[in-house]
Image (tube, rainbow, N blue to C red; front, side):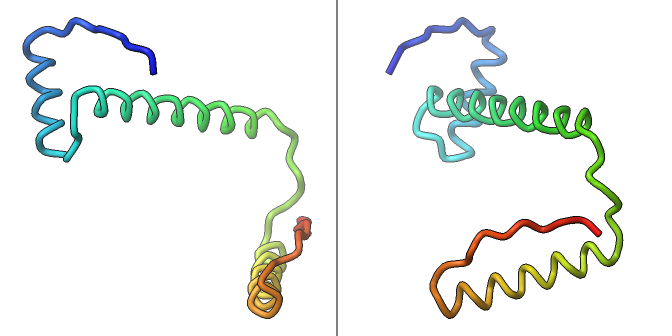
Length: 94
């Protein structure tokens, strides 16, 4: 694992120390790693959302679509229960 040293004003260091103590982190490094992981996940989600916004519409999502989706989930759950595995299936919009 690589090492990185950072300088913080006393106010921020006190905040980090408080978070470590109150949230059950074992060290300030663990707390900072968790913050970085969350930011990375947020950036990934943001990218996926923007990608989705830029993609063409797949079709109308109406009550029939959700009925089909519910049926697919029921069938998948029943099949998984009996065979131990669900088979992959594509759900198409109405």
